[in-house]
Structures are given as C-alpha cells and as structure tokens.
Amino acid sequence: MKKTRLGLAICALVFTATGAQAQQAIDTYGSANWGSSWGTYSSGYYFGQTFSTPDATNTFLQSLDASWWVTGGDLSFQAAVSPWDASTGTLGGSALWSTTGTSGTTSADALRSFSPGVNLSPTNDYIFYLYTQGSAGQTLLANGGTSDAYSGGAFHYLNGSSNPSSTGWSSYESYGPRDLAFSAQFVSAEAPTGEVVLKDPTTGGDVSVPEPTSVLLLITGVLGMGATALLRRGNGASSLGS
Image 1 (cartoon, rainbow, N blue to C red):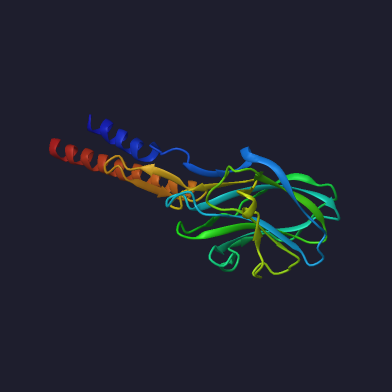
Image 2: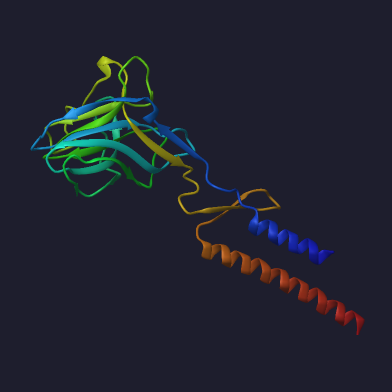
C-alpha cells in the first residue's frame, strides 16, 4: 500500500501540468475597412499603432501581425517596438525589439508576422511601427466611422523622416477613431515561450521547468529518492527478521 501511494505521488508531481499557456490578444482585423496610402519618400515613412499590455499578468509580447501593399518601388521595411510617450506624441525610448531591413518586390501584398518575444511593463505605452523607404504603398486600417476597434491606442504616422525619434508623428484621431489593422498575442511573463508549468500535489503551487532536460532530471531525481527510501525500508525489515 505504501509503495502504491509513493508511486501515485511521484506521478502526480511529474505529470500534473497546467496545460497550454493562457493567451490574451489585441486584434482589430475584424474592423478593417479601409487603407492609408503613403508616397515614395526618399528619406522614409513610418507608420504604426500605439498599444499597452492587455492586463498586468500577460505582459510578454509573443507575436505581432500587420498587412500592407506596395504600389510602387521595391519594398524595404523595418519593424520595431518602442516605448511611446503619449504626452508628447513621440517615442519614449530606444527600440526594445526590431528587425533588419528586408527587401521585397513590387505589388507585394502580404500579411507580415513578427515574433518580438519581449516583456513589457503594464504601466507603459508602446508603439509597434514600420519604416519604409523608396516605395509607395498602402496599409490596412481599422474603423473609419465613429466606432473604435481598440481604445488603448491609435494609428500614427511620420512622413519624410529617417529618424523615428523625431517630432511630427500624426494620427487620424481628429477624423474619428483610427487604428492599424493588426493583432498582438500576449502571454504571462511568469512563463515565457517553451516553459512547462507543473503542479506540486502537496502545496498546489507551480513548479516551473524551463526545458525538457530539466523535466527529465526532476523525474530521475524523484524516482531515485523513492527507490532509495524503499530499499532502506526493505533492508530494515530484513535486519529485523534475521
């Protein structure tokens, strides 16, 4: 009986997992209904969306998606996430994540997906923006009427600049709510990508295990301790009976 209980406790510790991470998303694609065009600026053009984390728990920005079309010139773009200062309407600091410049072909029409993988503060504002140079195009926007697809931010753009920290960022908010058609996936900062969370059957608390190797070591250690305990009990019984 004692051996059976020990085996059940080991199995409960190792294999009782919380399952997939809970995700929170910001998604304005359902309200996408028009586009904003940009010209071929030799010095560049920035456009993007301000946002904040969905809550105080899910602050790890796992992925970002946005769509745009190229109507003239070869596409060259760079994506980034930076702090945003809403009081001045400018960047609030250096980029926390960015891509390298990427070239494409004319008439490109695609959904672009990015994986920033950065932890954000729930008390700060941020902007997800893209920089293009030497190409004309159009980006997909949400709204255009009186409804607001996302009340936590707005679409912003900066014409004719090669420095995103410049003043002069503008929005369409004077015409009504305007947002970039985009989606952002957030997960808990306590369990970044790839981490497995196990439950301790005694305390009910989480046991974070970053890698499969660590899970294997945990299993081996617990089984080894259990086997040692059983051997000691067996040896003790043999000594008493001899």
